[in-house]
Image (cartoon, rainbow, N blue to C red; front, side, top):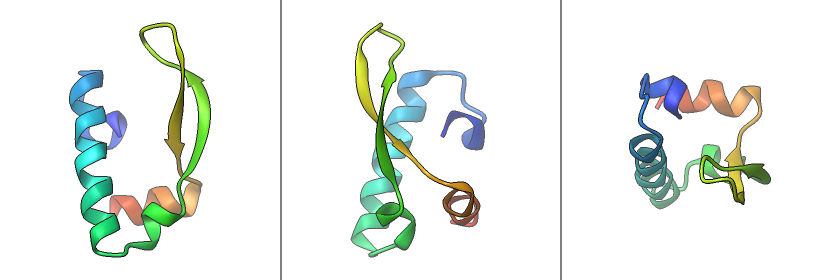
Length: 64
């Protein structure tokens, strides 16, 4: 999300995705249902579940 929004601040990018994901879920968007959660190392050093999209999902998200 940071790349799509050109955002350097991790917290702002995370909050934007949280807001957008809730909005898309409410609209029953297929982009949200296409997300998969993988465990990745977070900036605080802990391993957390992170939402992932495939290429088609990224393109669809960019069109929203």
